[in-house]
Image (cartoon, rainbow, N blue to C red; front, side, top):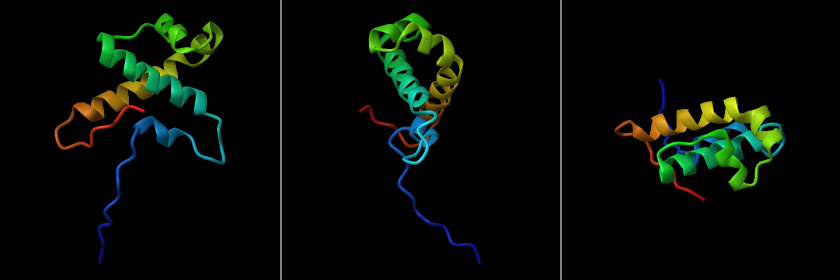
Length: 89
């Protein structure tokens, strides 16, 4: 018998990337959240837009592709009907 367990969805999909034990992807998760916020506000996000959010040019060069991918996943999940909506922090 399979039991279904009701779980509260996370506030941010990108929050699943990091944990208290391993902060390896914390910067990428913060960058992805910033990308989502910029896209919501401006309709798009370029790498240089992250400099205004406090990320250095070197951080953007190193982590842009992974953070952009995570942001795209979050935006796509939010757009699907029946999916939980995330809230900005």
